[in-house]
Length: 238
Ligand code: CNA
Picture 1 (cartoon, protein in one colour):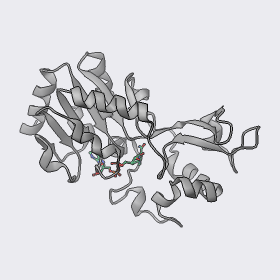
Picture 2: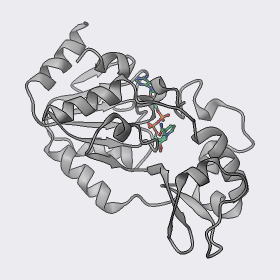
Picture 3: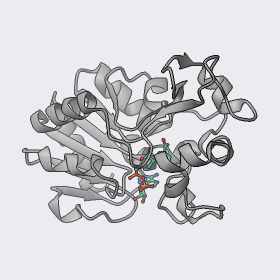
Picture 4: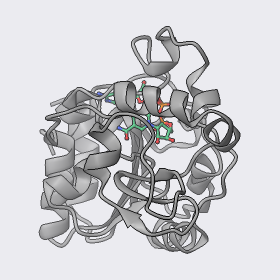
């Protein structure tokens, strides 16, 4: 185990107030591509850039094309939590971890057994009618063909935060609360490029901020510990 991982392990061993804040990189080892890595969705060929397709105005204008992308790229069958998801769930059970705050929409933290999960960007495992707001089975949305419609005639949409849409303020406030009062904050698998989520780092007040990310982030110099390794491998050692 290298020195930085040893330090992170020591921080966790000595604390009962660890908070984790993560992104797409947490799920790449489960086989879900992130956005900004070389083999991420932003570097794959598609008719429109993903950030355009995943925007509110695009969904309104072109829901058919949105759903082609959604079903082909966002929904990946048979994915399972990896070592990072599982270890985080264990740390919660051990009374060490207070919350997982995630930008992911894949539900894998809950699948691993985590209870306190704040989903900043929603989940593709939930759906609702964009007109009457009635909930709709995600299975039908994720695996059906054509445009999913509610009985009121409205188009069904995933319960995710599209670009141009605001984040749920209650979830944001709760995330701020956990980060502000955390003793150890681990940020992992996120490029820290997507705002307002990335700005959450600024609420941390302690001196045990660990960044675990394969590539550099704009916040590396803020962190007390930086580990540029695969997060699943790091978590399997702590
Ligand atoms: P991003 O901008 O794609 O960044 C991911 C980061 O993770 C990159 O800096 C990578 O270097 C790093 N990374 C990739 N694999 C690993 C690994 N195994 N270990 C450690 N680091 C790794 O993604 P962000 O989460 O920062 O951006 C926020 C977007 C991405 C959110 O809106 C998400 O909804 C969206 N997203 C979510 C998923 C998902 O739910 N699994 C997948 C793809 C994108």
